[in-house]
Image 1: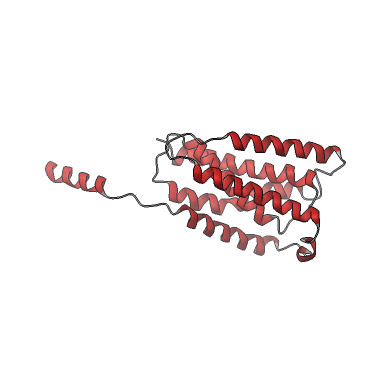
Image 2 (image 1 turned 30 degrees about the vertical axis):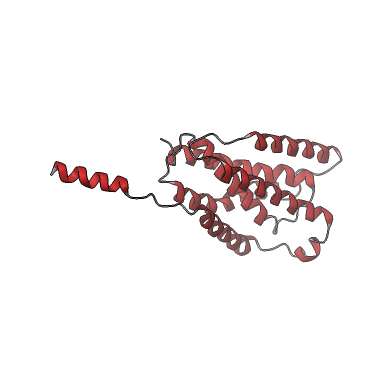
Length: 200
């Protein structure tokens, strides 16, 4: 019996690991977030006309810029090694400087929906976070918290990009603060999950 168990164990070890298909999971999670926004929030009433305005275009460009940057950072992070976090800190510093300038010029950082924005972005990120960690749960990461943090930030950026089609707050002082805060909270959620799910 012991020999049979050893053979079975070796055969199990030889079985190739399942590929997590993270891109597909991220897309499905994003579609879930789209449905949630449409059902629970709805599109902003003047979306088509608003997209012709520079401030609104700048808001959507900001969310897409952050999303593309985090996608590149996450996909290029080598498995089993520390990710290069320098672009993240540089981007964070630039956002802080831009927000300071926007606030100094008289922009309203609170708007009318600050709390709703701050809460909604992490909540809407949960489908992406859940599906991506479901794919990663069999992978052991020596830097689990860091990988979880990046995954959460990515999910938060997806959420912010989609939430922006509902949000009527177009002041840079508002979205640079609260969109970024919501993305960072999403990253914190990913950090906590990563420590539990991906730890050695």
